View 1 (cartoon, helix red, strand yellow):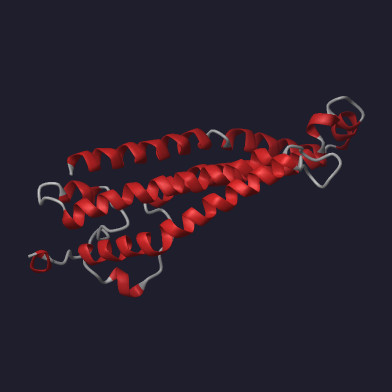
View 2 (cartoon, helix red, strand yellow; view 1 turned 120 degrees about the horizontal axis):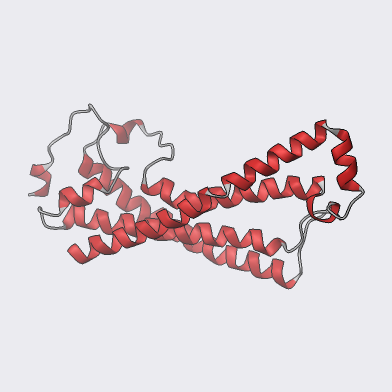
Length: 211
C-alpha cells in the first residue's frame, strides 16, 4: 500500500510540475494584452506596425488569437492540479453533510463510473481532433491569423491526459483511505482535499462502518 501512495505522489508531482510550467504563460499573456490595448489607443504605433515587417508577426488578429490560445493553454495545463487541490466548485448539499468515509465512497464511485470513462472518450476524441487538424493543415479562418491550429489543439489532449493522471492518483489514495492499513489512512486522507471535512466542521466517526 505504501508503494501505491508513493505512486500517487509521483503522479501528483507531475501534474503540479506541468501546472507550474503553464503558470509562466501568464507573463506573455499579460504582455500581449497590454500591447494590444495600448496600440489600439495610440494610433501612430498601430499604423507604424501595420506598414512594417512586424505586421506579419504581431497583427491585431494574431494578437487576439494568441490571447485565446494562451488562456486555453494555462487552463488546460492547470486543470488537473486544480482537481487534486479541490479548487473546483462543488455544490452538493447532501454530500457536504456526510462523513469523510462516505465522501470518499462517493468520490470513488464517481471516478470509476463517470470520470475515467469520460476521460477515455475525451482522450480518443482529442487525438482525432489533433490528427485531423495536422493532416488538413488547419489554420486560422482569418488570413492574418495564426496557422498550424493543431499545436493549440494538442493542448486539449495534454490537459485531458493530465486530468486522467490526477484521477488515477486520487483513485489510489481513495483505495488506501477506504481499504488500506489504518496507519496509512491519515496520510491518504491528508492528500484528499475533496474528501476532508471543512475547517471548523465536526468530524463524524465512522469507525463502526469500518468494522
